[in-house]
Image (cartoon, rainbow, N blue to C red; front, side, top):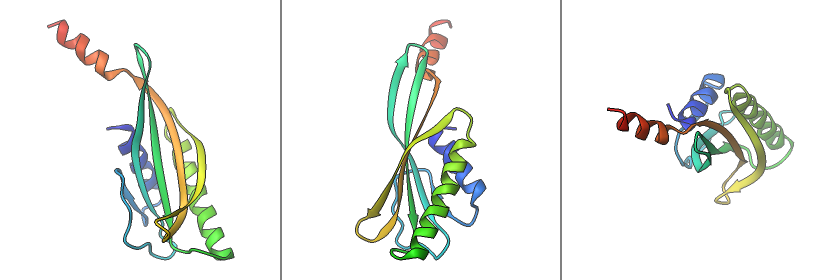
Length: 130
């Protein structure tokens, strides 16, 4: 599984009533108290010959747009996503920024990252040893 798939699965496992997609996506609507989430890999960096850094973007959409109830819903949903990220070994969030998406949905855009072995190097080396 890719890092985006792993994170999307972790969010869905923690919040099974939410709609969670493991690719860039915008909902047509968000049901009350049932957030929607899109997760994708937005950046890939070669740290060194053996290691890759994956940067993931997480868009968190909530249903309410203004008032105290909207703020509580957004904060609660943010807490749930950040806890899901922290629960994935090797992954950590670095930024969460409040957003209004397309002047329709409120929510958060979260940046998370983690490292893995350089699978591309391993594949080349495995191919050259045959």
